[in-house]
Amino acid sequence: MSHARRRSLALLLPGLLVALCALVPLTERPAGAVGDPSGPVTGNATYFDGLGVPYGGCGLPQADLDSQDFVALNVYNTPGDYGFYPRPLTGADLSKAGLWNNGLNCGRYVQVEIGDYCTGTNDGAQNQAFCRGGSWVSDAYDGAKLTMLVADSCGDSNGWCRDDPYHLDLSKDSLNRFVKNGAPVGDLYPGHWNNRHVTWSFVPAPGYSGDIGIGFLQGAQVWWPAISVSHLANGIHGVEYFANGAWRTAQMNGDMGQSYVIGGTTPGGNQFQIRVRDVTDTLINGGRVYSFTLPAACDPRCGAPYTKVGYTTSNGSTPTPTPTPTPTGGGVSCGVNHQVVNAWQGGFTADVTVRNTGATTWNNWTVTWTAPSGVTLTNAWNATLTSSGTTWTAKAPSWATSLAPGASATFGFQAGGPSTPGPSGITCS
Image (cartoon, rainbow, N blue to C red; front, side, top):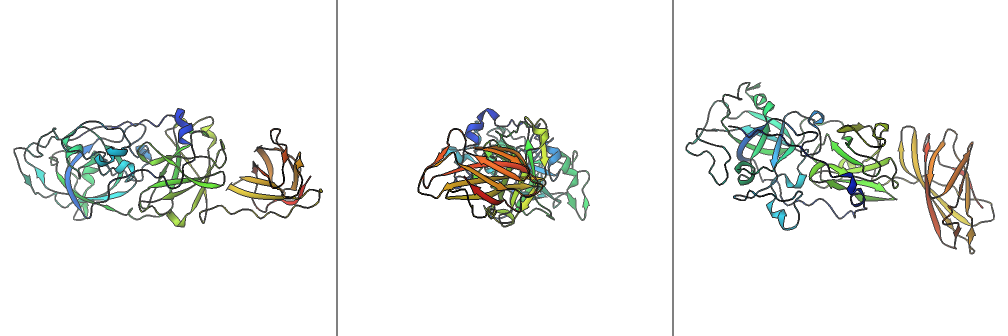
């Protein structure tokens, strides 16, 4: 017998974007309650036909998985209790968590070894023993192995998904790819399956090379930038995004453990920077920063289930401010800090903070600078910014025209061209 199913997962609605895009303190992380087994464990094995449409439980379409050998882990560990509990599990319900662990085991790999088969009835019926009226018997398929990707979840109300904490639901197409004595077994399914035991454990990604993949999900837009992160060396326990000058913790998209809702480097902007934490809660690649842009295909929103994007990377955990020369002339005492917050091939965004360092109010504040050749203005916010050749002029917005002594104002802009060198010849008036 088999546990054949398909699972369709809906995204959190973009209508919830205000709550999802709130700035979350770095101390808040997805809640998990289940640690890894201390060693290899043995459980019942079933199979399922494939991931749901458009996504599996981890937030990726099946076609975009790193491996087509994949498994589902149990959402719940509630022997004898087959009720539904809202996902992700929170509060007192955390005690009901299975090894799905609220999605925190998504993107990890397990090594699975085929064990003995049941000669009786193993149908996952509620409140019934496994392998009723029979026994577990070894045969020639015992010991066949395959390394498989955690890509989906099993929350069904049957004995397999509720009563057996170490149950694995295997991709049906993988069954005949298990390897023994250096060759695929070839005919485990359908004639020799018999709802077997399997022994398994978490393992590092096999033969890992390269770097992560990033893609926007269906419905993503600047105000609801839902992404999925794939090609992971050691799973994923969190995503952080850079916004308004600080790193923020992204909210997981339900319990789809590889999908997170991030924010732009500026409110409503289409430029993004993230860094990623693995299953040890360590920033991957030494805190590497991944910078990318919402693609044109996602204007006004992404229509495809998954739109992969290119990115640039930088080392370290915080963007480095672009050195800014000291303002001169104009009869006003001021300070100006220009910081590139996101850069990509062909453009960048920057924040500029203007401070009145004098003893009197600075009315109708204006800052002028010379931009490097080849840099062009795309748009700006929180100031009136104009350009004439390489001369750029920023003027106070209508709602905040004056700066008292010691006060400051920050505005931002998007530009085409190289992000370095920074501006020169800055003057205040």
